[in-house]
Structures are given as structure tokens and as C-alpha cells.
Image (cartoon, rainbow, N blue to C red; front, top):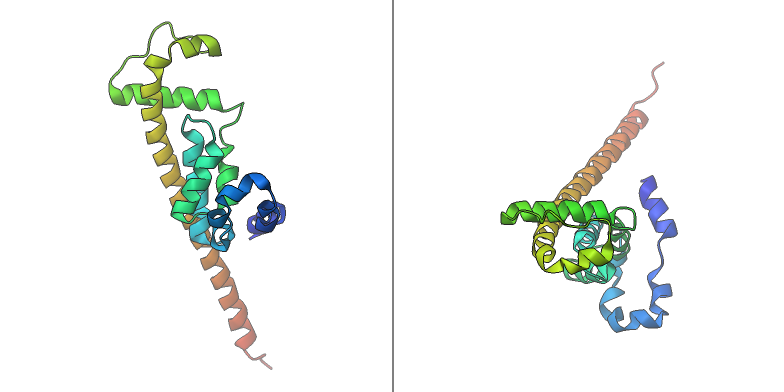
Length: 180
């Protein structure tokens, strides 16, 4: 898998992170080798945890992703990478969608004078915004995490089956004696 090699090449090594003083408080759990090993389950779990943490409107997305990876035995580096789905370019449309979804789920109508372009004015309406935003974000986070988990597991499985099939064909070709 080319993607696996690419990620492993650029991924920080656990022993280099252990030297970081900021990481020592969680080191006993964070630096367990299974949390850094590439396999179908850990990659799918780590990516799903990162996406879930990324769409929840709280500070410290990466910390939540790391905690979820420790609890669910996911790949830590991929979880941190997946949290960057929310970035300065994408956070406004994603949170707006989550807010609209939450308002729909809760049966609320959004305020007509909601200032979407001004951060300070938006904070003045936080009492009307927080519950639909949180509800929509939780639903969206769960759906995105489940879809990504299943997709990665199915893709990984298909690649393994493809590899097995290729190996079987090579073995069969090698087993056939040349005809004279």
C-alpha cells in the first residue's frame, strides 16, 4: 500500500514525541506501541476518532482525538491528522451545517437576525446557538465517524483480497511446468 508507506514515512516516531515535555503527562498511555501500529482496525478507529473530534465545537480537538484513541485503541497520528478536517477554511460551513442540522433535530427555527459573518456578534447569540450546534455536531460526528470507519475497513479488506489474489496468480503461474 503506497498510502501506508507515505504516512509511515512522514509520521512522527513515538520515541521522538516521548522527549517532548508537554507529552509526558499522558506518556504512559499515549506511547503504547499498539496505538502507533498500522493495521485495519487501528487505522479505521483512529481516523474515525479524529473526524468525530474534529466536528465537535470544542477547543483542543486533538486532545479529544488522543483520548478517544487511547480508549478505543486507535492510531494516534491518523486521529490527529483527521482533526484537521476542521481548519480556518472549512470550520464555518461545517459548523453552520451542524447548527442547521441541530436546529432541525430539535425542532427550533434559527433566529432571523443571526450574524454569520461577525464573530463578536455571533458570540452575543451563543445562548440560542449552542444547543442546536452541539446536537447537530454530535449527530454529524457520529455519522461521519461511522461512515469513515466502515469505508476504511472495507477499502483495506478489498486491498488485502486484491493482494491475495495477485499472490495466488503468481504462485499458480510458477507451479505450471513449461510445456514443450
